[in-house]
Image: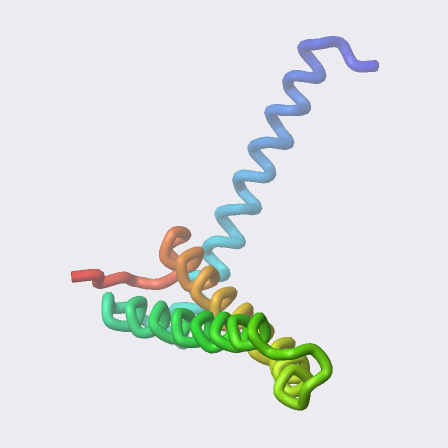
Amino acid sequence: MLPQDDEDALMKRHRYALQEIEREIRKINREVIHRDIPKIERKHVVELAKVVAEHRARYLTAGMRLSSATIGTPEEQELIRLLPGLRREFETARDVFAALERAIEQAYVDVDLR
C-alpha cells in the first residue's frame, strides 16, 4: 500500500491524465463533426425535435390502438407486428437528438440559436 502522500499524488496524476484525454477527445470530435456539420441553427434543433415528436406520436398512437384492440384479431396482430419497428424508429430519432444536444454541450459544433 502506498503512503497517503504518494496515493494522493498518484490520484492527482490520474485525474490530470483523464482531463488531458478528455480535451483530446473533445478536439477530435469537434474536428470530425465540424467538418460535416459546420454550424447548427435553432431551426435545425427545432426541426429535429419535431421529427422525434412525430415518431413518438406514431409509436404511442399504435400503442393506444393496441389497448382497444381485441386480442387475437387481425388488427391486434398487425399492431403487435408494427410496434417494435415504430419503437426502434422513435428510439433512433430520440438518440440522434440526444447526440445533437451532447455535440452542442461539448462545443463540437458552432451554434447560432437566435
